[in-house]
Image (cartoon, rainbow, N blue to C red; front, side, top):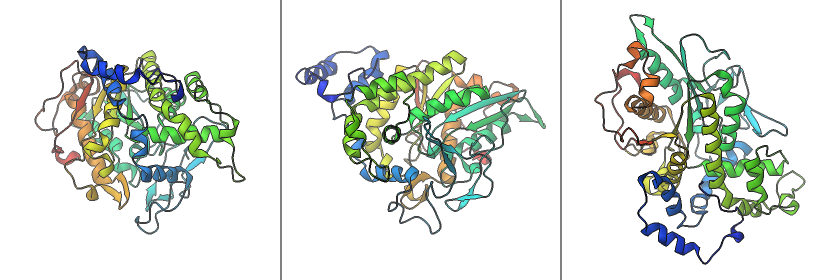
Length: 422
């Protein structure tokens, strides 16, 4: 197992740690252990290196769910934060903490209509019962996947649905209908995505689950854990309770002021810090096990931000960790983190200072996902197998991908020409 060391940094043996890393660098590893080696390699730098190098981003994501001011001064007039837009409802003593309100139809968020269906998804109306002849893809994610600052019709999830449907339509007859159900909610941590899978997704009988990961997932986990501890919410999962229990957090760390805010939040975060990647490993393991038990294929996509914070050198470490953890649980992974590398970030952000992808950025993400699906030897027959939908029109020439037994496929190329489908 990855990251099985105790969460309390003080409990780690100090003297032999450099020796182990030195040996790890000299030993020839079997190819199937490369994911584990990546995790050990990343341990050469301090555990908190991928958490502390973006203090601005941390404040940005706290604002996203808490409504703090001062981080979006450059955004257009009239744009409001997530809380003030009144698109979420808070849940008392609940592991999820909050969710999107259902049946939003007249709400405006960031200057655009923000609509949800009766199940609180930022997307088309849906039914719990799967219609006959329908292939369902369920997407788990956070704000980039939910569609922050764009209409739901512009999200990569909706474009993927339209593209799949168009491929299945021949002479007005559909061999198969597609639904891409968007369960993503802004600021949802990996743990909240796991809970969403168990509580909501499986009831819709998906044929494929897509888990979206980003380089900010560790930050979202930090926010989620701190809020649950501050509010004394039941941590629910044994592996979460055990990890938090090993940190030595006590009542003094959870003291709050008259407004209910933590008095020394930094001290709490410092104690939790060493647990995050281990918790992420266990979370992905639980998601993989849940899908495996239900007989539902699982794929992970690594989604980039539309700005310099996800430039190649800055994203290298967290992306390597995400890929390693996915490989540890044999999760088919599409690394799309380079999707925006060939574009000017200013043309892809929803607004200055807000690096969520705009409609153009979502178009790039759709193109990358569509090409990856069509080229993948495992998922292409599953997703695109029904009659005419097995054709590859609109995707252009097939481009080289990893070998069939490779769990990770990257893009590393300019955005493809998908004709009218983008």
